[in-house]
Image (cartoon, rainbow, N blue to C red; front, side, top):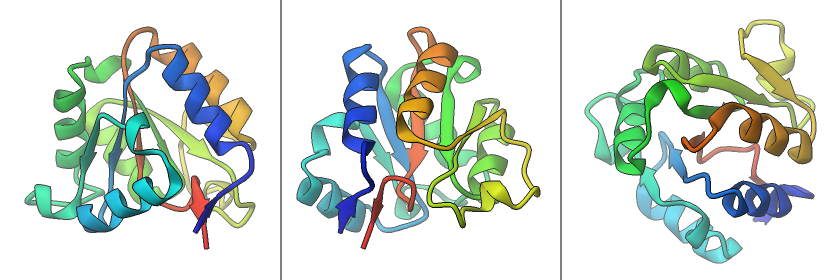
Length: 150
């Protein structure tokens, strides 16, 4: 696995702004933590809420709300970055702003079946969107395809 181009710089920019980040995933926590360690990204994320940590996985908002609580931020000022309808539904149900990661191009965010607040085509654009929408709140994303690929 390796990161998509410019994703590390995006994460660094968000972290440098002091915005806490977390991951909500329907995958096993051990798998996601191992991948984060392999990519050298463990320190970027204050929390990982995985499928074994919740009674109901996405699209239910339980995991998003757990991550918001772990980050110590207000849900209404939190941005959830995702690339699927499941991500969008979880974010909206939790009361977060839903920002779509539009890479790779075959992402569901291009299907016309979503209501993401904004869709970002490049990591730098996504960093700007998160910074503009969070203030001092947090950013949460899934442990999915928008950050890395095989």
